[in-house]
Image (cartoon, rainbow over all chains, first blue to last red; front, side, top):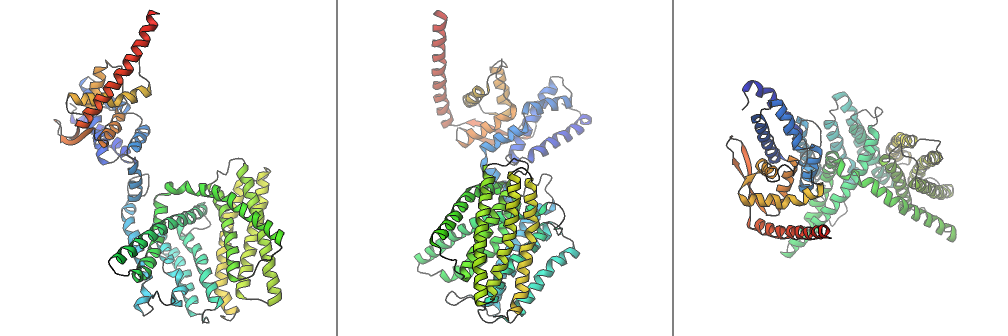
Length: 459
Length: 112
């Protein structure tokens, strides 16, 4: 047996080994205890054979085997643990700090706050009624139920200090005043344009909170792009699950003769939709590695499909000669299509190794961008023709602006892509361009929100 | 002589079950017994035994129980179950088939 004089530094070494083992996600507490017992038995046997304590430790550790290989074996046997551990604790390499332990609580409170926020207007008589149209107050303030809480979550998480935090809160305050003070006519176009553009403008504020208040410093902005896409994926998954839950709720209560439709429409769906934004954001933060691999796969899957659809559309238009109808829904659909294309380019950029040489997929991306460019020009032409014939309306000007912004982005992207394919540009240039362009979308959206209603007389 | 990786992996289950059939045991003692029985020819990386034990436990071939050891620390003891004994009999038969097949082909090679 070891004397206490030797035992102390040795104990320290064993403790270090144990701590190292604990960090493995596939090995849980009892496993560590079992392995440590083995290590100690081995050390005791070696010490009995005449080895000094530290020698015995080294040999025992060596015989235990490579910890990477070991934790791989554990992971294979206990694959369910990886998932569980990811949900319970975010992956931080070091010791669990105060933040990791309080984070689930903070997230839960914020999610509950978001879920309650959407019910707050009901306290002031603005009830949700499935039989009536939703009060316009809800639409005006749709951005304020959850986005400030999300920005607050990131401000808390990134420890944004008060002077900066005030700058984060200010845009929300200004936007809330503007949206609620403007005397919109009932069901006016400018109101709907404001409702649609406000989240885009405020998403940048969330982004600033995400990067810890320093938008221009560091390479965190690409991280925010990834976050946005992954949140979208998580949200879609959570929404699908929520849909199933809602369906079963209605079905089961229907079975005992109670109509749960009102409950589902006024509580379950709105509260769930708000809370899911916070929960989804936390999940993206906590376990990036789970879904990280999905974005590139989806990008690769849909880039060819969207390319085919765009080319088919262009071919059909050329064949039949039918012009693009300038309706609000059509304009929105076209803008969304172009946003998806820009999103695919952005995602391909965020998921790609900037140093890899161009391949077939990059050629496909260029084809997609060029096809989108042509579609964009056609849409622009249609809008311009409409404007010159019937004058300016808020819808047309908003659509015109968005198309121009996307046109500039796509044109320069195509140029950079072509340069990259010919080996003149590095891929990093394309990535930088996409990231640098992000505030333009929000700036335009903010302009639309603030300037359009007064300019067009709130109609 | 060291055994190949695949052979070590394949023989782990019957070896562990056979040793536990001799009596209840724990990880370190199982490894020691394997080394002893093979005259040092079968060397396992110690840590790798535990995923094997946990797999056997999940399949219900062994049962585990925490108990205090002579040193006072908690130790996880493993016991073979009835299903484990059945599995051991099956594996034993299979290994005997492999063994006798190899024997007969090598015997022929000697006499030819």
